[in-house]
Length: 323
Image (tube, rainbow, N blue to C red; front, side):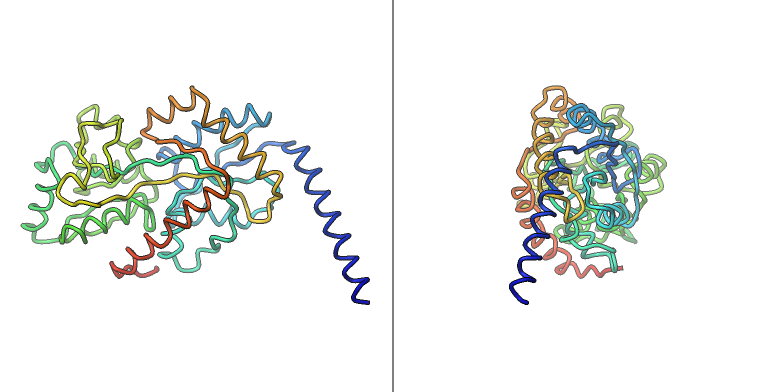
């Protein structure tokens, strides 16, 4: 009886593997939805557009970008994690989607294991920015202003659980100053309020504010990466500004629902790596301050696994509770 059950199980596994391989050989046969877990106009949307055109050409199917912002990127991530694992619903997530957001959001509706890694795309520093009318011109002046203020300085971010959010909390902790987080449903509403003078400070991915820095409507105080960004080479790092070791960057990667057949994951990874080697794509990413990094699915998983304890420790040290 046991032997018969084992044979049946083995036969079922062989049939399932054959079905997955056949599915992968035909894949894709219809348009693919790429969910961006932030509102339109932010850096994630820019990167999605930069890679989706070439991926679409390689896969010979349209890729439809679907922005589903909110809840620190967990709404969009949940939509992918709970979708059918057939390669037709993908996620362009961030390191925050897979680490920070899950620590700061109760009942996110998904876990890290519910998403399968396809490949890393690249990293982008945050920029600490103020309205150009602000008298603050450096991190040192920001710290001085905060120490002399009667109430905490308000800083904006694209939402609770984003790297932008944690970058602000980390700076406040490191500099021993009081700042109050103002979460928004995406990068553009936060930038709009900075330009309108409704918040004093913004932590934003460089692509979102680069044109405003160039136009002189926004002043960049520092970038949060370990080294300066080639996009704004004259802007110092937070580490250079008196806080050695400070580093917080946005990492982007492509994911699929767990249980997506491995042949489909491999096909998508192969095409993503080819896309990240394309000169026109590299040029577009460079214009947005992205430092691309092509990886295997396993290498991407390792990057996330390395990030998780770092952000978990910061969340614990700062006493940030899930909401």
